[in-house]
Image 1 (cartoon, helix red, strand yellow):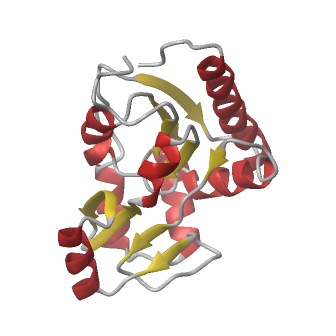
Image 2: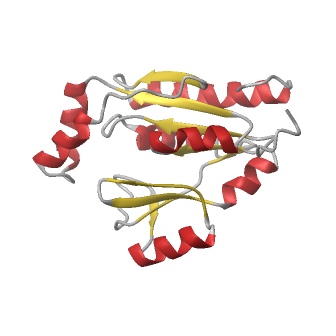
Image 3: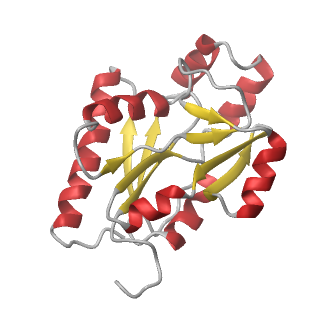
Length: 199
């Protein structure tokens, strides 16, 4: 495994799920819980949209700069969704290479790439019933009704078969979902410390 050409010995936890599932809420909770614990890292995504810390913790990048940075190789992972550009900074590659466990909200469209790139990948699939998703999307007041319907149509999808997937049904309190995510991260850290193969 050490000579497989993939980045390690750290790991990438890909947090995925439909819009409104509460991925960012759980990530913020996990980051607070693990803020003083090594080796966890929570990178800030780059998005071609003005930042709103109450809704999503990200850094804003201009559309023209996004393309320039993509060409320059400044992104570890990048994708397009809902007319926007999203990216994970390339710095996470060095962090994973140094043994960190990186946890980030990403699109399912980059999961295959992540599995090819990183030696240890775990997928945290955060989800909720469609009725709950619809209520949460409407409550945040960011999308039109048409946009909400479009996001809900994308709520059902397949995940890579060759991956370690943990489902988190985020229908209880945010604390409950956060505890599941923290448990996943700490369990992964323990497994890697014991030399177990994750993927």
